Length: 469
Image 1 (cartoon, rainbow, N blue to C red):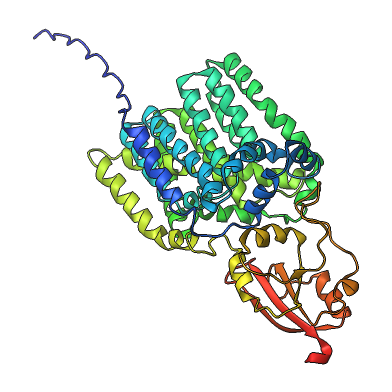
Image 2: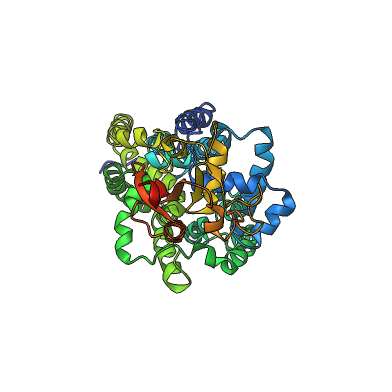
């Protein structure tokens, strides 16, 4: 018999470190993609609400927070100081573009740690081509901040940096209350570090708990949200990606990536898969157990997970990781190209106030009535020439407890001596507004109405006195 000589085992290969250039490069590209749409589309109602809140004094913001949008108070405080340097569209949206850059940088590092460097780079590349990133990365609301905070929290967990983790969890709650629906996915990582992780998570969760209590007391402010059924979950891939075609394609690839990661590292596979799948399910559960809250934009925090899992799927291919990642990114970009163009149009946020102003062909003595008084913020912001007389307006400042403005109650008296009235509202031509009745009762009849290209959009209507028709 021939003796078999045992060969010594080869030492394990050291983990591949993230090249120093990779995170900054990903951040710059993602920032540039988001910023490229920041100055083309006009501000919509939500962004104008940010401007309205940020322009108030700190005492005024606190008064507002006690009635509406209390959970947005940290973001409004940040924007309060930011707008002191300017209120241009590009400037208002710049923080969100920066947040997208931060999310991409940490996604590279996280992808490299849970799988490989190609996975991290591909994840950042896929994130950049999502239309939802172009939209929320050029949006003066905190959704991009929430996506960045969630990504940092997963990275800090993998590094076991508990102070950073607690801080990132706190940031998650401060950026958007429903972003905390990602945190249950992280419970898959408890084993072996239960006490430390629970303490860090609990400490970071304090701001979310406080803001959640405030938000619960103000749930009347979101009474406009309809109740959704389970079928709404079928639209989730479209929402996460920002377009149906690329959303469904990447979601299918991401499910394959989830299978790969669960086989490779069960706990991290479950955690990242939960990052993608749990928030829509939990948001729907909250809607049915507490109050309707299911709104697509509340789930943007899942976009990095969609990109990461899809990237892991292609990075797993032997000797084909790089070409497969490039092919998937190019294909996703091609599928999403029309949506990238759409969000960069002037009406890319579906409320084109300059268009509405341009529709008003003025005559001396024209009056203006708003269907929603909060629209004044947008018309004040964009008006560069003479406007019809705002006959119902009482003062220049919005109400202390809302984004609306105090108005005169007697429309007939306000329109006395007027021959033409412009009525502007958010929504379709068919919207049933009290102002229609009050203007008609004041002796006016509809001449013509115009609606912008998309729903909800804006509608502009011209009324004249009956005797002039």
